Amino acid sequence: MSLFYRGVKYEATSTSVEVVESESGQYRGATFHFHKAKSVPTQNRVSGLKYRGAVVR
Image (cartoon, rainbow, N blue to C red; front, side):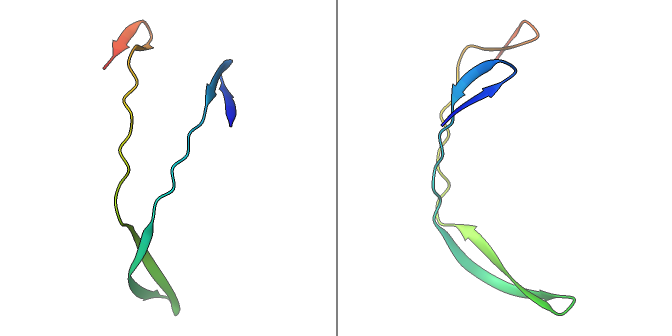
């Protein structure tokens, strides 16, 4: 999917994350369930970014 932010076009990448239900609780009479990720995906570092003329590492 191609997106625009402040006139700059970029391609969005999405990752799917597997989750497991870990525990449940109750708040004001309503039951809710917590979900945790099985494994956290790694993120690719982007090089060459600048913010107000300064290089961001």
